[in-house]
Image (tube, helix red, strand yellow):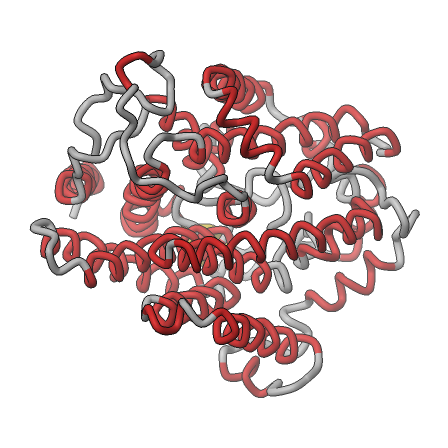
Length: 463
């Protein structure tokens, strides 16, 4: 099929997905499009990367210092719009912030660490982007119908990124594929720039689609049940193909574990037994940790096509640990992989790594033991918030639990506690405490609120 015809077919197909999943009764504000735009960028490529015909590994460490004015201006514009929305929702924002002191303390320490960074200007820009992600989460969670907002965030981004990834891989190889230097073995990237990033996108949106599929499956009184089952069944089929093409075992393993956890907690009798949920979560994380680091069940790595060094990750870990300047406070927010340190690491590896492939090690390198301790507090309080949500509302609590478990397990072999990372964004969305829980009700005072309010009455028929 010629690429232009394939593009037209995919556009019609994507439109069909939105049409079949349409719910005119649930209302969300125009402001929700701001985090949608942010997530579309975070889940694919920056605008400057889309301007290039193909993606190649960076050959200069200076690129990470310089950045790109176009990307910076677009992200700052989205942040400005988000702040306008949040100012209008001041009381709601204040209540959520007061309920999430550990998250605020972690972000505050990240900001303070800028002062001892070797590149404070770069660290400040990255910290601003990190705060922007928190702002996007607040925009979603201050919607009057928070459940509908989360569903539409997943739909408006996932319905685009997943099919377009297939389109690019199949019909636009210059954009959807890459080739390893010298050997010219292809790898598949879809809308992203690297195969593991494609796997991560499939992981995040795949869990959202499993959540919607299970919810629809159990909603026997929903007259839109059949068409929605077709929508999410088709999307899950696309995801299976993309997982196979991406060959990202970390993402696939996390997807299977979290999907199984959601299926089990969909049973009311299970979700109400907190002790059983604790055992399930502990079992998943213990199996993941022991297989990767304690050489327990090491044959499993070989079964999934991975070697005991985790494709060279352990070598990188030993190298970067020897380059730690200050174990207490670290090198400063997202400052380790910059300048001379990065050049030295690249002198050992032709494939130019730019992360430690372990989120907790990444936090240690950048923020030291203080940052690790603060992250631990965030994890503990976040898990408490998730369990509270599961007891209060199992339908939404199970997806929050899935995103929490995925973030904890995924960061064992990938670095996802960083800016512009969908795993980190949805982790924050899952653990953020919302007084009263995620709501479904519509406000009776909607007509009195401004256009970007969370309770916008003049919204178009949403899809």
